[in-house]
Amino acid sequence: MTNTKGFLNRNQLKYLVIAAMLIDHIAWAFVPTASLLGQVMHIIGRLTGPTMAYMLAEGYHYTRSVKKYAMRLGVFAVISWLPFSYFESGGIRPAFGVIYTLFLSLLAIWFWDKAKCSVSVKWLAVLVLCILSVFGDWAMFDVLYALTFFRYRENPREKWLTFSGITLVCCVSMLGNEPIWSGLFQLGIFLVIPLIQYCYNGESGSKKPFHKWFFYVFYPLHLLVLGILRWVVFA
Image (cartoon, rainbow, N blue to C red; front, side):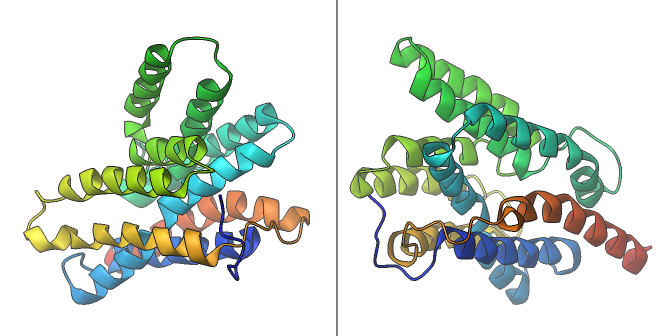
């Protein structure tokens, strides 16, 4: 159950992690990862993916139409493809952004919730979606985070224990980086626990359309701008 004593509603939490995402992407574009500044900026950026997965699970709970929600994510996943690919590699390749991964995460939650089949078949479907997510940002982990937040929505202990286990796997997967300590920023994912458990109050905030659509427009736009700026600076 969400802690209702927090001071951030859903809109405020969303804008906070959008700012964290911007800081993270600026660091990827212009700041060496192994530098102290790079580590700090990426630690802040680690709030983004898991918190978006949490908000997706919340969105599934509150939405009046899962089909429209999925369609919206799918359309903007396609729109974001070229900006994300250009930002990541300076060209065109099969690389999709976090909206693509969130789209697959929603499908995972939807199937788990509504499919009339065994748990084994559900886990097989989740595995397939995780494999498909390797083309997206926060691959595999956001799918698992979102499903965890959905399954244990009313059980904080199980939710955060499972979240911590997934995060440890994520951190260990970065140990192959050179220098080895350059992957330590992944530990910033654990900051998501106090952010959501103690700062989020469970309220939606204003329901004006601007708050609903801002992220969908800002995401591909900021990637395109940063990609062009990086080309100008380093050309």
